Image (cartoon, rainbow, N blue to C red; front, side):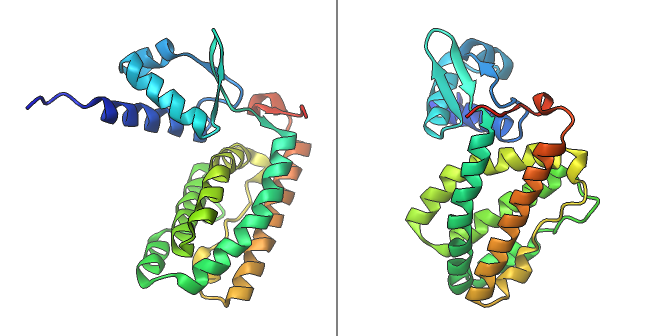
Length: 222
């Protein structure tokens, strides 16, 4: 039996590497990439990279540009506004369902995560939020809501990665999910709504006060 990695596993590897760079904004929103450039960077074959690019395009994190390559999905002011409009509708009922359906295993997973403090880095805050909501969405146990969340999750991580890297919001706090999960369904839904609105206000503040929006690759194009 061959010890060489299968084509599928190589595609998965390329997908994971590229997706992480996009979500962590190592690859800036709006930047362009090519199959050959990524293959050389990752030390992988063109077929593996091509498969990853197709999957990331389906995830709405990349856009194919004929005869040029691919563009990392830009973050625009309109996109940020629409993200928060959608997240305000979707987030609270997901948390409400999670509170009513969460198992002891889900609660243990949440409790095991360390809640970031005021001095935590932006990367730590984003990682905590990403991991907690992944558990919450799983606990909600609704395939349709899970699919809708997945559509928003990429933009969510990139927006907050950019914002939490800014000194403008060094004091922002992440919602301690353990507290929300000990509340009643009504209280949990209200907590989620309050946090989302506070986050929207913080992002708006950042947009208005950042000294160089260009350095964060945020566009005001509609």
